[in-house]
Length: 328
Image 1 (cartoon, rainbow, N blue to C red):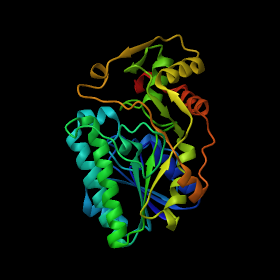
Image 2: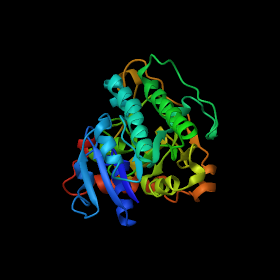
Image 3: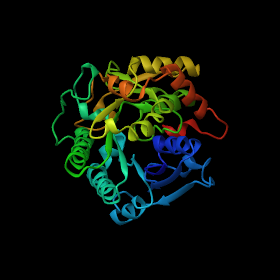
């Protein structure tokens, strides 16, 4: 495989680059470093089968050039994180919609396979336990910035489906459910690195809302091997496939587990969504995936528990030279 990873200097993209190189593939990373970091690529920068290209998915000409050099594209570049969506809603919409359309156009022109990274956000406020790929979306007002990311990802999926059904593109969509682990920053609103950083710094762990919200977190090392497996699975083309864990935890319960594993004496405090995220924010009370399709297609079964995830993030943030407060 000669692969292009858009957003490859980000959290998931850099782990995917590591995995592909270890598996013997060639990797090109395109990233504008708006939220990614060259630190994430430090271990592979000098690898003979790796190349980094600075740039944005909004640069259609650059994408076209790179797509002509590869046979597979993993499109992970996106504006992500509740704080980013809140502060730069219009830019986020443009990046997430136009960037994906540029990727699909270039892939079709050069007959490259594509994996499009979508999100469990497309399900919106649907609280069903065991969300299936064909379940309904339940979303709020498009005038609330909270739902702009969900809307953009839904458009991305519709564009991809159209390219597959009408133009014959070989493309699969993956809906990621709270992928977490080392290299993820809490700077943009991600809860696990934020809680860990607060606990290690002795600062209060800040819960937005009641803390009764339920989530399922999946380790990036369980998710990443599934991406090349799915893009090579012809039966996956034109479909959306859930990837995540079914281990449920409330946000309040997550805070207590972080405190226990860090041996921190930090307090836990609650803030309203308006205080923590901004006016007009709506949260989701429960999000639990059904990953039967991925299990049937590629044998996907996460093996790392939530405690495994937390220990890996704690270990990374506890390394000498890493300042936990940097992720607050």
